[in-house]
Amino acid sequence: MSGPRGAAALARLDRVRQRLEDALPRVDPHHRLAGRPVTYRLIDGGTLEITYRDVPAIADAELLAVRRVIGAESSCTVTPQTAETLTVRFVVAVDAARGDEA
Image 1 (tube, one colour):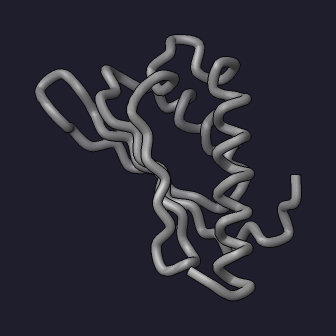
Image 2 (cartoon, rainbow, N blue to C red; image 1 turned 45 degrees about the vertical axis):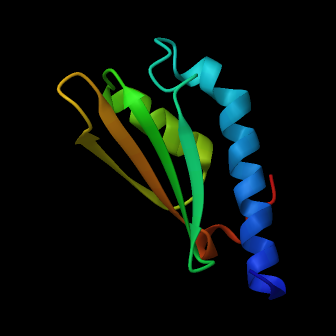
């Protein structure tokens, strides 16, 4: 990934990752996401996908808190992974967050 759009997307990914690392202990009091396997993936340089695996359960309030931490236009899906665990995926529009320099 090269060029200004790629550099901006990578910078956004770094900001989101750092925000989540800093804020998860506060917004995830039951440690449902903190400490779980997480992947960050850029899709076509314009979308960031954040996937948490092996999540035992999740409440709507926790999902909303994480979306606030992400601080950009985003969507969230929760899907069964096994009989006891879930996969929680956040999809963030990087282009929508260009003005976010926090």
